[in-house]
Amino acid sequence: MSTRRTRQLEVIWDVLKDEMSHPTADQIYERVRREIPNISLGTVYRNLQKLAADGKVQILNIDRTQHFDPISNKHPHFICESCGKVYDVTLDRREEAEPLLSPDTGFTVTSHQLSLYGTCETCS
Ligand SMILES: [Zn+2]
Ligand SMILES: [Zn+2]
Image (tube, rainbow, N blue to C red):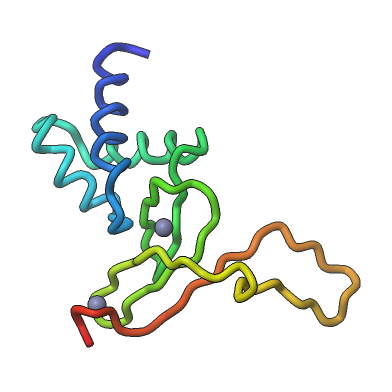
C-alpha cells in the first residue's frame, strides 16, 4: 500500500472514530475533503468498505442507505423517523431482545439487530 493510500485510510478513520452520529458515506466524504480536497467519493467509499472488512467499523443498512458506525460490536440503535438521525441505545441486559423462533426447527440464526424507531429530542 502506498503512503498516499495509507494516509487516505487514516484520515477517513480519524473522521469516523469519534463520530457518534452514524454518518453516511456522503457525510464522511464532505468531512474528509477538508483534509484531502482532491479525494473522490469512490475512494472514500472503498476505504469505508475496507474498514468494515477489517472489523473496525460496522455498516448499518437503514432505509437502503449505509450508515457507518465506529463501534463495531453489535448494539441497538434508535432511528428518528423525522430527521433520519441514528443514535446508540443502551439497553438493560434483561431487556435485550432474544429471538424466539417458531417453528423451532430448520432455522439458523446468524445475527440479530435491534432498532427502535420514533422521534428524537430535537424533532419532538
Ligand atoms: Zn430527529
Ligand atoms: Zn451505533
